[in-house]
Length: 259
Ligand code: 0O2
Image (cartoon, rainbow, N blue to C red; front, side, top):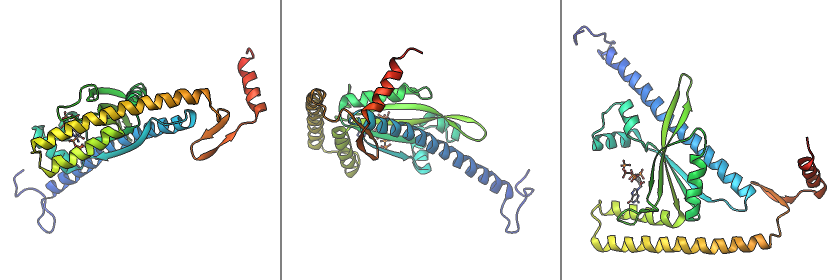
């Protein structure tokens, strides 16, 4: 079909192009939605862990959770920068951090505990792990990065969708947000003295993490000796309350009696 043969509307707009653009917009919307749904699914998993930990154990290893979706513009910029093919299937395959979740934990051991708890779930597949805690980047950056795939159930298909999960301690997060600000302020050309200061700050943050975890372990050891609230039942959102001893005894009897 030549340019002249193509159907046009009253204003002379090419309807074939219009229909193709509408189709592309629909595909792009579905594409972006799949990442939002994958992110929502992972956030639900993380929040379940957080609530369960606060209710069953006295504290939650998860301090804070945030998430972000790259904008279509950000995705396109990254694809161009990296030289990836500019079509949705190629982008889906190559750009794995369109959906990103950041989990801030209290202690270093918690970051690995959360990693294990998420990676162990049946519908979560870990595609890649980068452990910048064991091996910090040259600038001092520390964090545990996972690229996971999770199935998203759409109306006409099941789509495995990738999510980047960054797990780090409060101290690592504090350092990373400041370094990010400095990096952008200097447009990537951070003066050497500041680079060195940042490296030292990263070391100090790591020492703080180690020290705080040691202190925490000592407190936990004390608590298990003198646990005054051991018989209180607590559930997120409700004040702790005692369960009648008779009820607990009945449950215990039920457990020990043979079937
Ligand atoms: P945003 O907006 O935070 O998402 P790639 O993801 O393919 O470009 P790379 O380097 O293999 O490249 O990925 P990597 O190492 O897993 O790091 C990706 C993300 O980790 C970054 O995302 C940052 O969020 C964070 N990150 C990595 N290195 C540093 C660092 O030195 N300082 C800080 N503050 N954060 C870091 P984006 O895409 O940069 O941005």
